[in-house]
Length: 75
Image 1: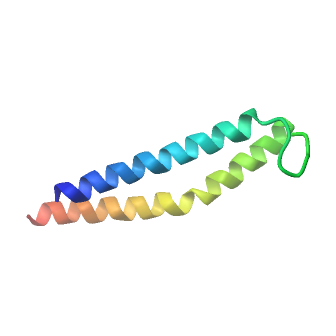
Image 2: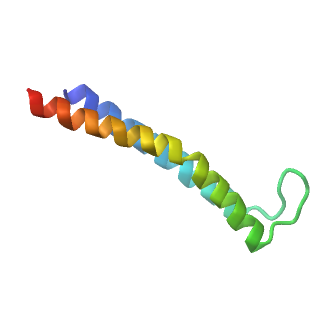
């Protein structure tokens, strides 16, 4: 059981770090890869796209949490 929790926390930290780095990159860049100058509105749209992309891992992590809680109760 302990290995499942260590794996869950490690994965959560990795996903959080990826999200944090992506957010910082979006908010500090002045020009994107296509050469478009980033306005606050475009940065917000890019952030929302990043957020939508991270919804799937959040759902998977939530299901994994429920699995860990139920498996821990059975022992």
